[in-house]
Image (cartoon, rainbow, N blue to C red; front, side, top):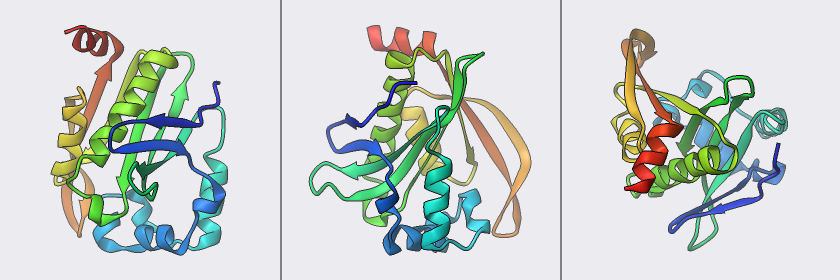
Length: 184
């Protein structure tokens, strides 16, 4: 698999997540109930060492794990992951979070999704991307939809959100749809 170092957009760029990104700030994001409200990682209490272990585990041939950084200050504001990549079916999951709340609602997530989508379809020749989001996570769902993903399913009462059952929206994007959209 190709080693990718940096993908650059207008407001954010993606670079490989590094062990030195494991900081008290990053740990704080993962342990902050406002930030982790829709993340499965909220069920773990994170430390510097557990974050480093997670980063190490994601440095493999089937996953691209990126830091989302703002172009202006080059600050790490969140993460996005493409993978695991299924080499037989040429598909992958996309997951992300914006940890720096100052960047919420400012397009960082949408731009990161667009960059990873371009990577997946233009460089890695994948055929399909999929993502899931809690139904209550309206901002995340909208970010994926802005980038061409469409709702493909609904898993009723699949998760608990603040102790209340919530549905999970399944989103997908096929390479054929991407190419049609790109040519218009």
